[in-house]
Length: 202
Image (tube, rainbow, N blue to C red; front, side):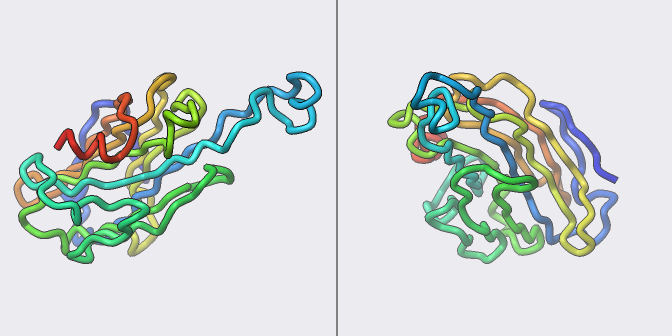
């Protein structure tokens, strides 16, 4: 049974889920539907502004005591697999079109090195500043956690805040709590222009 979380809530991930190690973290979003019209060109191209698709990228920062200690611990479309093999990003979706997850990340909690205490899941808009795009152009954003062994959805967090003007989203965290793992629903928007700006925070 899926547990739906609100912003700021935390939940045990492994406690009570005996043997849970391999999870799939799915992130999804939809482009806001443009209103039809906008003169001849708008009519031709089916959208008031037209413009490029909003290309959102999901990334994971593997933190050691709240610090990003190596570039190899940043998993994104340019580095799809962690050096330890515990995290495998399935790749980039350029438009957000279609139902379901737009990007999926496979995580093996049992393989994560002991030094890593937290995984931070972020989504940013590729080239947001140049393209003049922000998360006000995105709707129905969510993150969910699925048990890979039986495909059961464990957790879902719908990001319902108004993120207009924001170019990056800190979506959620999975962190160690003693010998267990917990999940925290974060849902904070920031004005970081790209992944390198996000990484600098750590």
